[in-house]
Image (cartoon, rainbow, N blue to C red; front, top):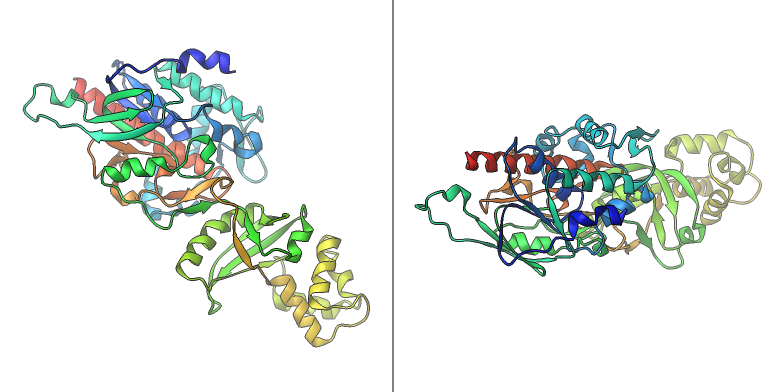
Length: 440
């Protein structure tokens, strides 16, 4: 596939080349923004240049969904995201819906299929299909991509308000390791800090902070596995997967949030959708209050009372009851942890302890696997600093932002990709409109 793409991205930058649009970052949001900037110019000829720091384009796309790329989800709402206000997120998502995403990829030759979970994947089950379609679409509208070309600085250029044709003057200077671009519009799509080997190493935050933006704190990994204390019995169940419910609570017992779904025991702690969805909330809440508590219900279909009733109703060993719902290894370990005997009736105190172990095992989380493993970043530029109709910065005219550099992160299941497609579409379309108006 790389030989087919080579004409698109082997172009070298000229010294201080002038372009209409410079896009920083060739990930999902950056490619989408560049494509729609090119598609929406309605016959006008514009120059769109994309710069990316990665040696291999689209690394995040290629590893997403286990190499299959979970393009989006069948139902996406603002409630699937955290960070900035739901109302602001909703406004952007509605500009480019799931249906429009599916149609865009269909027009690009990528048919999507829906799985039982609601996730949408390419029928090819290959992320390369998605990346190639994006690069082909970019090439078809004349986008040039240069990489590896790390952007080290973005400066505002002085603008002579009395100059003739001032609307066509470059407003921003983009400095990269491969050259300099003078651009009328710059779209920053550098991503967050997750998977830094893919190029999203957090450098984009520094670029936009210099131009007046703030970065919400704390900036933490999202969709990341959590680690447990060394020697914890859960680590001894590595490889075991069960449906479970994970709950985050304040020390007072007040519930903050609960996530249910497949849960994976690992040699370091816990992973799986329920844990990944919970991770950003645990990290942020712990930063504010070190006394927050995390626990897991291994039998989410049961409450403490219903499980207690079940254990009293069935005259068999506790292990015999639990193994009807849980894998033997987990059922036996829960009995060991609560002191339940292999046979015979349970005393009331042991039964209560077992119920607590099953429905609310405390999780002494020590930390997380970090940005190197995380699938997303919690934190970024708040949407209140962006004009939601265009994604243009309220701090720096001509600067636009899209994707993960913004303070929006979704739960697992294709939601972060949908945010990239939606925000990239809004930014690219707005830039195209600005360019065409300026050229008239």
